[in-house]
Image 1 (tube, rainbow, N blue to C red):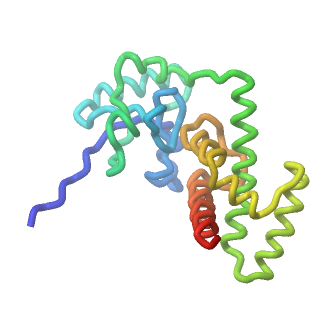
Image 2: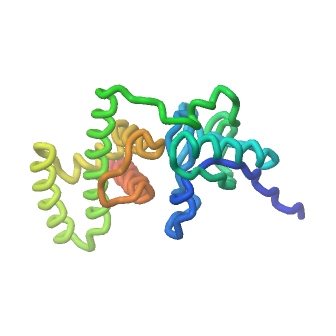
Image 3: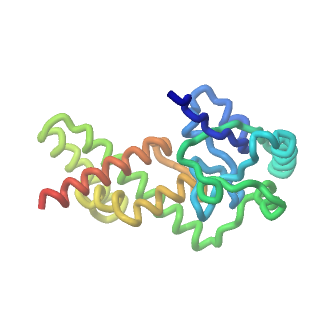
Length: 214
């Protein structure tokens, strides 16, 4: 039998305090993307900046330039991911990406407010999704529903478990999660980005089952 092919390893940049944390897993380490933000995941529109493993010196030099510009220690990390495609999730660094080392692209005030508002709603709804998904019985689910309705009425003027699941699973929820994954906006609630992504997957699964049961 042929031996399994090893995954290609790429070099990326990450904030030293985040990437060396004992609580940080490879999946949650945030790396620099083409918009100059610290992202958990790369997308075709904003891929993670990468160097081939053979270009360690170039990656280290870029980390030093980023550290000097940002006033925080940036280090080189080694990553391999079977799902990555060059030009999609990651892009090789060129001179055109130099500005991304120095600082993040600036949002307009209106866009910054919108991103924050949508992320806040997404995080609040994900708390409800997680609570509802772990309810042990109908009585527990009903209690979660009452608490959710009260919280959503106070914060957003109304809502329910059903509307929370639908919003998180829909296009607006997907865009809000993407803004968190790409570092366009920071998390402010009790859930980590990994927990938010898990809640989104739970909501999407629940919505598919609900549609199939109609």
